[in-house]
Length: 430
Image 1 (cartoon, rainbow, N blue to C red):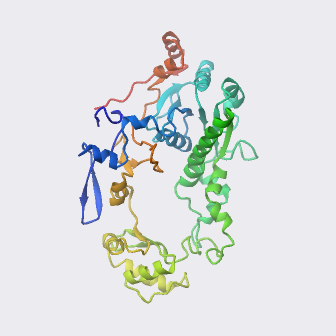
Image 2 (image 1 turned 45 degrees about the horizontal axis):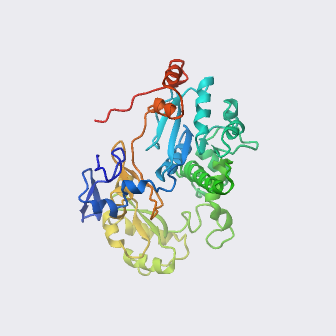
Image 3 (image 1 turned 30 degrees about the vertical axis):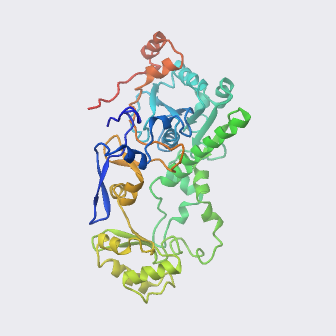
């Protein structure tokens, strides 16, 4: 979508017009031009003269391409104003879905001059983000020692599964392994159910990418006092444990805990804290923890005499399940909407993006492949983040970025011919 010159550049995607469907209480997205300039401002989209004051504007990040955690970390930094150079490995498949607004240089890191390209890019950077196992960067000649000697202000962020030290540092792994080793996965189980991770959210993204972004921003803030960068050792295992601190620190909090996993107040043991199936095979989420919320929940469910305790009453669970199974999700949504009973529908991703709440806050933005993707969070009053934007192809900006780094045009051509870097064309914009 193209905008007028007073607003963001045309390569930044913005939400479209929304129309309501009162039958479901949802809003629906229409990819069309905005009705007014006020709509742009009311939904949190910012004018071009505000972009210069984005929180991380002017921060330059070199992100070595990896799987989900590092790209997410880079996306967070970009959404809040940083400029991201993604260093892609030549010949690798293009699987990154968290690259909005980044630029890409494609480098053969095993080529001596390819590694030197990265080193040169880091001389002008504020942050290096690397996702490899310990020792890989050192073997490439790109470890902290030479790079911080070149650039003492460089924040060198190392995002790995188990951290840079310890007996497990070199182990291969994925989110499920880090979560298992963190002590958190054992809590996500039930009496007749093996531990089940919540997809790959906790270690990869919460304990990994987001925690690393927090560390980077803290290091950048400290640099304003010392003038020096530092090395960040971000272990996804430790990060998963850290974001789950309440689980560790509340184990003696009775009667919330005290039983085996899956039999406690908040982990599926209580009939009033969990999900219940509706007549149309959808679900409603119930979190009627406090007595006043439970009383309202029971009344609206048609079970005014229902007792909150014991939490594992088979008869109470049967009554609640039967009640929810008597109506569709849409019907129960209408019953509980705004009733202070802590009952909500379990929405699909598309339904969440189309909900009235998301529409009112412009919580989603159009993605480059169609459909919606989450807008940046949290909201900032003076320096708001900006979501959306095109995703680069591998090596789309190689020549452009090398010229910006001070290479002569002839040097860039030679690097391409020698196989140290590659230049790819951008996707057609039809």
